[in-house]
Image (cartoon, rainbow, N blue to C red; front, side, top):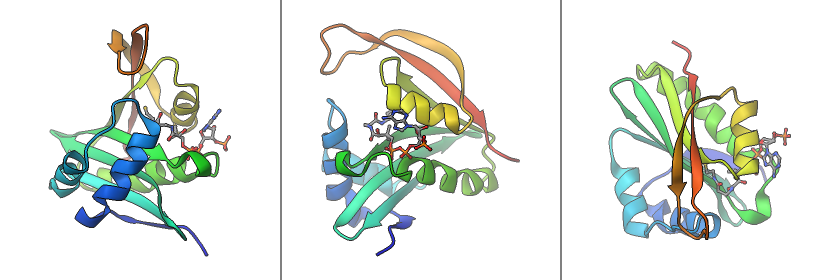
Length: 151
Ligand SMILES: CC(C)(COP(=O)(O)OP(=O)(O)OC[C@H]1O[C@@H](n2cnc3c(N)ncnc32)[C@H](O)[C@@H]1OP(=O)(O)O)[C@@H](O)C(=O)NCCC(=O)NCCS
């Protein structure tokens, strides 16, 4: 069965929150995820496999900029191109909606995510010292990155 990319709805919040909890030390609640999915300025995309949601991403737009709020792939389905597929699928609709830049921040020690963003054309704009603290003994810097959205 082919994994299917689709927009998320409110009913996907429990599965998306579970993926988030499996991927980050600061797990978001189902209610937080549901609240974001419901926002008109949030593009929520997921990939559905045979057993349920295997990856999702949330993009929030304001004043011509879009921020990648979060992206996560199930730990047992990583390295199969799902995160790349989610971001690439978002580029055209975000640009069509009038957004010109896609922004994100990533922990400096998050090697897989940094490799993902580099191969999709993100470049570094700056750094926030000691931004990430959850689940860490020593705070880690955030790297601020962006890439243009085709206009
Ligand atoms: C980061 C994350 C979303 C990547 O998801 P994924 O579905 O495994 O990524 P993809 O398979 O689409 O990888 C796309 C590219 O990213 C790079 N990449 C992904 N994982 C990598 C790893 N572990 N090591 C090195 N490069 C990696 C590769 O260049 C890869 O392309 P390639 O397979 O053609 O070489 C996933 O590891 C994850 O959920 N991590 C925990 C949550 C997280 O850190 N999210 C990002 C927060 S900023």
